[in-house]
Length: 155
Image (tube, rainbow, N blue to C red; front, side, top):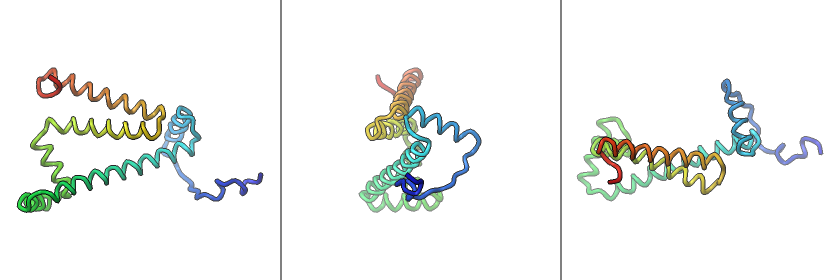
């Protein structure tokens, strides 16, 4: 079969320059996941796009909550966001993290776990399993640390 006869010959092609060491690292990851280098790159790009979509969905969720706030509260948040040169979502997150500092690390960890769980469900590959294990270890670390200083964690 001539090269032009393959279905992939009709797909978009893009020449790409890798920073030092990146090609080798991606190739190694591709081998670990049983994929070609091209398939690994596409897989990772797809994951990034999906993560961006999930971030936008989360931001929309915060916005929806905002819309249900009483007018006076909403106006104060708008004013603070403008004064502090933040987005509305950024101002809400900043305020919550400032007022509830013990929740911020837990929220970050839960975000990592939720993302990893979704990815593991969708893909079922070794990399996702590793990321989930890493996230769970971070939760264990958080609880060990918070139990030692008595600030938070399970009782």
